[in-house]
Length: 67
Image 1 (cartoon, rainbow, N blue to C red):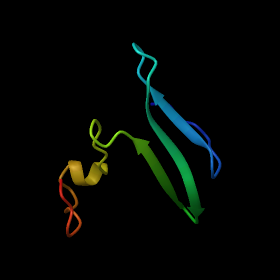
Image 2: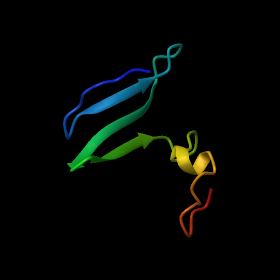
Image 3: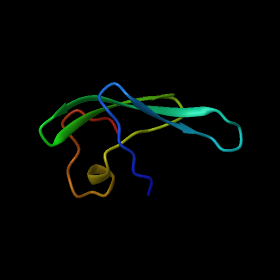
Image 4: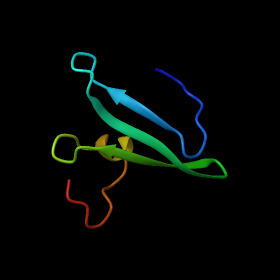
């Protein structure tokens, strides 16, 4: 696991090792108490982003979710 410190407005990029293509940008959008908001920028037709607790089945999908 890679652990980084970031400030609000800063980003982390995820790149493909083979092609060098930037796959996703993750930006810290806000910080309030012990909670942060993250913004994900990725191709919607190629990548699906989901919270771990929903993927694991330990938390139900929000009403109206289409995944």
